[in-house]
Length: 88
Image 1 (tube, helix red, strand yellow):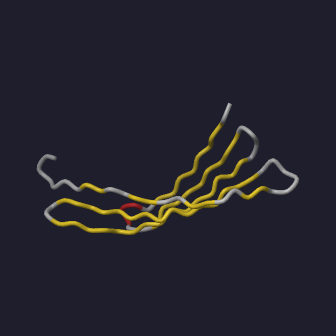
Image 2: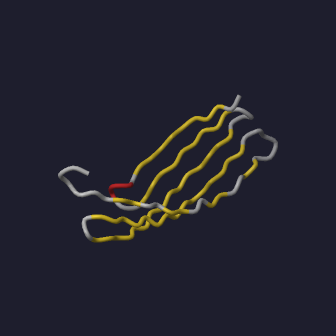
């Protein structure tokens, strides 16, 4: 929209992970991977990139999770995320 060209992306992925319980503890974690196909359309041509997301969700208690994830792939879509989740 506007003077420049417009790109349209449709990321399609599948997240695969498994909860691991630590024996004798309330702590558990879920490591996961998310392979993603990213078709890009615009400027009269199209392209398909492949990215990979990795992360872990750590449950510290019944109400508090720490989440850390990263995106690997093309430079425009690399990143790291850290979050806290509180469930009341």
